[in-house]
Image (cartoon, rainbow over all chains, first blue to last red; front, side):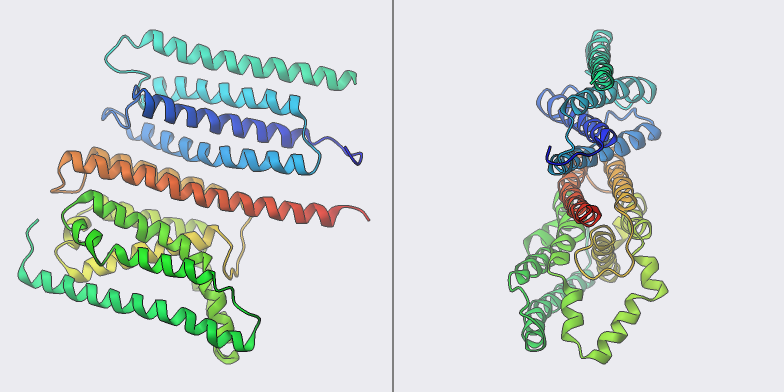
Length: 152
Length: 262
């Protein structure tokens, strides 16, 4: 760091969370929709509110992955990058999106299921537990970096 | 779909009109470059490439093989609409036609155009939320009402709908991306939110079309066309998102340089 400055914690958190959300949405689209084809584009039983929520969420996620990266480049350029904080936020974004998608979109709004033609419960459990684990990793990392910062 | 003989003549006439407009546009741009280079610094000739591509792609939705197919093939129709309403406007904005017009016109006329751009009407139209509503709302009207069926029966209506798709697409693009002359500016966050809303409702519409395509479209064709709209829209909007975020990235660099104490 060339000059002394107040660390931009908020910028790192926002950039990490946005990139995490966007990346998980891309993974969902590429792996589960396109490669495995477990998810359906539209399963014809979705209520309108489900399509609306899914459309807006995916549009937001596309924006988030790009803005998250540009913010990261901006932090880097201004020597404001705090890698531990950014990584913790990134995991919170990943897990948060996965869990939101699994609970709100799949279950509450019934946009589409994880997989069709099979018993869906193990898939739902796997999906949401994976999301929760990522989220917990993020939170633990965040608490740890906070403690380190206060100690240092 | 059945067409009467009258309709065929109407659509043929429309093709001729579009061809004349496109050819004129391709000729006027370099002419304006030539005239204004005498008064001002040299205009980047590479910008003509954007203009050229934009005009050709927009015209290809209305003339030629793609346009021909789009009368009976919903996939071709959708490809044409992506070109006319999204990709062509984006390319044309890059050629900065308003900037070129202003430096070409004599002072008196330039002032008049400038007054028009600053008028209440144009200011309202280029508000991001208004432009987005005209753009995406227009699409809902085309696909969720009888308009889609009706426009294939009347060449006038067909021309009007396609003119709207192009103009609304252009208006939306300039309301989000400040590349050409921009009179009223909105914050990055404001434009980002409107862009997300527009893309979100574009996605919703493609799913509604997937579920129930306009009358007379076979189910599989409707599904394929809807998915082309969804993913094609994603690709072009991704370009707009990257450009918008890049503009933000450049502007924050300038701000921090100014803010840094000497």
